[in-house]
Image 1 (tube, rainbow, N blue to C red):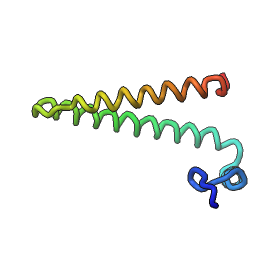
Image 2: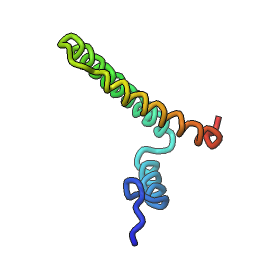
Image 3: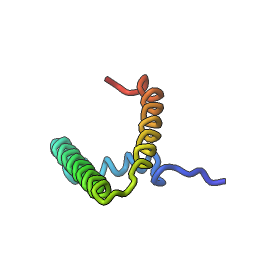
Image 4: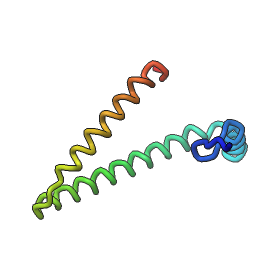
Length: 93
């Protein structure tokens, strides 16, 4: 009878972590840290997209069938659209 939670972190643990972050870095530094993390995540996503593109080009040059990846991507896009429909009314604008 265990309840599993994502990453095993609940509300009080997140609050405690945020409290420690504020104490260590100060409230004025948190936006700069978040901005840096956002840029880093964007660079990581761009790098992985470039790697995927290069692998796809190389596979096409070698004559490897990559049509199954398009099917997978279509299914992923459908799931994303369904999630956006559900969460669209919840998100702040």
